[in-house]
Structures are given as C-alpha cells and as structure tokens.
Image (tube, rainbow, N blue to C red):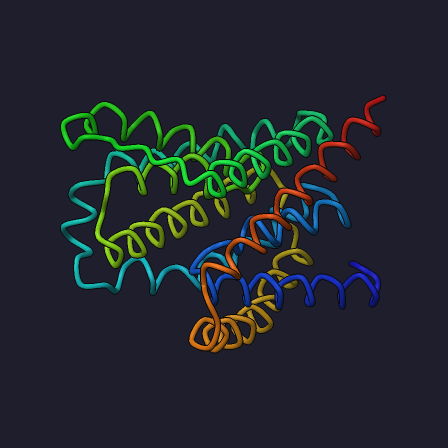
Length: 250
C-alpha cells in the first residue's frame, strides 16, 4: 500500500483531474495517468484510473437522448475499443514500462499540438464502416498499454462532425467501454490488486468533488481559455515524461 504522503498526492491529482473534466468535459485519464506515471509508475497509475473513469462516464455515455442511435452508428468502433484493451494490457504486463511511458508522453504532446493548432479533420459517413473497427482496435490497444482513452478515439469522433451533445455522449460511451475492458484485462493480468482497487474506488470522491468545482468554473469563466491552459500544461507534462523515460533507459 502507498505511504500516507503518496496517498494524499494521489487524491489531489484526482481532485485536479475532476476539475479538468468538469470544466472541459474530458481529460480525466490524461491528467491522472500523466501525473501519476511520474509519481508511482505507469502500471499502478492505469489501475487507479478504472473505477473513477467508469463511474464518471457511464451516465454521460449511456443515459443521453440518442443512446440507441449512437450505439447503432458506432458499435463497430465501441466494441473493438473494449475488446482490444486485452492485448494492450498483455503488453503492459511484459514490456519495459519506460518505453510505454515514453509513448504516453508522445501521445500527450501529439494531442496538445493537434488541439492547439485546431487542425480539422473530416471523415465522411461512407468511410465509417471501414474506419470504425480500425480506430476502435487502435484505441483499445492504447487504452490497455498506457491508459489513454482520448487518442485516436476522441479525435476520430470529432472528425465525424457530430452535434455537440451527441459528441459528448459518444465520448462518454467510448470512455466507459474502455474502462470496462481495462478493468477486466487488468484483473486477468494480475495488475489490479486489492489495494489498487480500493484506492481506485476511494479516488471517486475527489473526482466528483473536482467535477462539481469544474462545473462552476465552466459557468463563470471562458472554457476556451481554460482549455488552452490545460493543453499547454499537458504538453509540458508529456515532454517531461518523455525526457524522464528516455533518461531512465539510458
């Protein structure tokens, strides 16, 4: 089990991650795994993510107005995302975590650059039948490897030009099913211990508190300004993780 000082830092990280999610509608995995990887390592950081991610996204994803229509359109994206967390966590259990941590850092930087540059991609509906399974499988593997639910799944969903509310719900769907697949896969690989499961459950409390704070921030400040600060911080964090991972390998 973690020391008291480490436990307090973990709870503080999840409070911050909850604030970010409440303010911009996403960012829980990126913030929590990114920060905690630098503190406790990649494997336990991913394990701690499971319960907060599942409980905070299930309502967003499956209790909206267009659940059936969105699932019918994107089930070939969502199901592979859940299933392919298995090979991802299999690699997580056997590959040198410094390489995977570096990959996480690179993806954080990539996501920051794409978001700040406001590059717009557009995927025609006629392409979705072919791209959904490919993007879903890639998202699932990366979720299992490094706990990143955002790339490429969310970028892809944004490129389909969904209406704002449908996009938020679809993101909730992919986050929820990623968390389900991740929890099963981690358990099967013995990467989710009882202590980590208990701590993951406890992390729900600061996340919910943070989301309440974040919601109030969103109502009182410019979401765009906060998002830019968040993305810049994410890029700096990604750079730090890459540098520290490469240094540990050297």
